[in-house]
Length: 346
Image: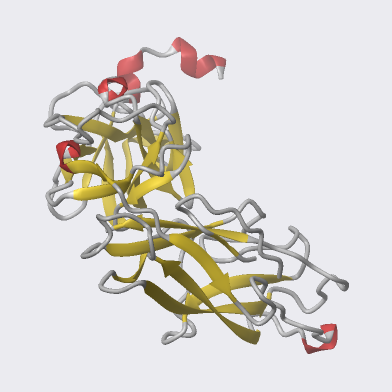
């Protein structure tokens, strides 16, 4: 498995017409959090979030939240018996352009980063479905369904300069997404779940620029060696190879001490799911990453894990790269795959 190296603050590691004719109100889907009927979640940065002044290149990850998992119950409120899909409608209040120009705030869903844009939406699953009436049609109202959404919030640099004093001043709440149906946003109050981000005023830019490197069994490369294709058993972990991520803080800046470093993995290669990197889409095997002390605790891509607390000059954290068979007839030959590791502050 190949490791491509690029170091900023982030080190890089391994490896139909009928519907259009219907009035809009006939597509009103109400989706609330199952069990609680909650229609609002505010993800608040309630503690200081520190960002390195070296991380101003556009697209650089500055911070990522924990992963949230919410289940929503959707109901047909306007008699659309055929059922309709549920979506995440991004930036439903069209206010996110008001966030400071040095920051891009978005949502990671299914390991894809979405920059919220008004009118854009992403499918999450069936919100309601047909209840057969026994005559080839559907009873009204449609059958309620639940959809589960796992997501996290990210903050990236845009390439524009932060405030001169390094402090973001913003006490507003911004709606990230609304769970709603195919016909558009339901504007009835308290009918549909929205997730908000707040507390951006806790973001402060500091001088801390750790140098990130990877140490593996072939320098900065994880080498699995020769593996016989005849060993392939679907679902079996064939081999695990250790590597470590090191953060050198010598001369990294006066504000590093006392910070907790976090890491998240990503890749430009194909993936099978949120944890499995594929050398090619038809390789028949994939690469997964786990903590060294939890060999099968697969780390989802774009999900933060702790590297350590800065109280010295070097932090070193151990991981495992695992080769997993996905087919009994894997593709033979040399393969390469890579993954980036972004290092941020907690």
